[in-house]
Image 1 (cartoon, one colour):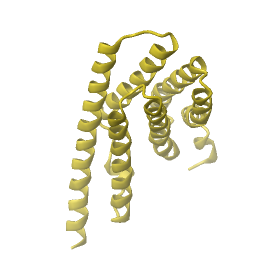
Image 2: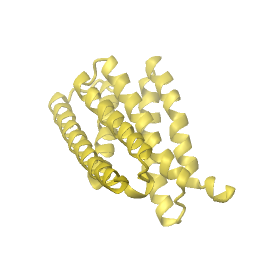
Image 3: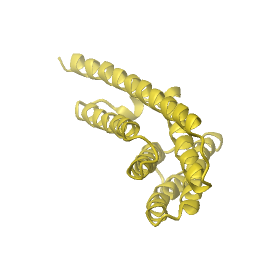
Image 4: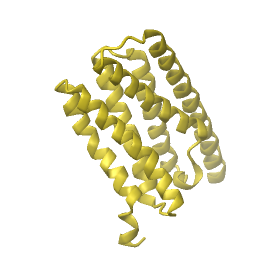
Length: 190
């Protein structure tokens, strides 16, 4: 792949999202919540924009295919841990988010070890995109609620449960796909 193909606008946006994560954490831990939620919102927008631009400008790259989900995981897992440590979201939903991502990444590593080309065989599924969106909206909602001292407890509860449900469902779907691919790999090696 040519060097020029790596430095596409979508890949640069993805790298910006990764670099915004520690800045978000610094703003959050110093209790500059206005800046923290704005940084998170910008990072969330880069997530939507990089994929859109990669499609319409035909700038999909192998680097982007690896960095984009990594950037999502780093930002969301970090954000959920920060919010749970403050007691702003239930710890159990953070455990679900972190566990799902850990299981998916571990499963990909095992499949790669068994010789499965996971980049070609596993494509993002619609519920996974909805899961990412739900997680992003939950973090932004909590940050805005806390920043502006709003109390939408019922709505927060609904958002937490929706986020938890889609996180579990998408995790199950990826695990199921992983077992299918693992079975194929084992059968092919016999």
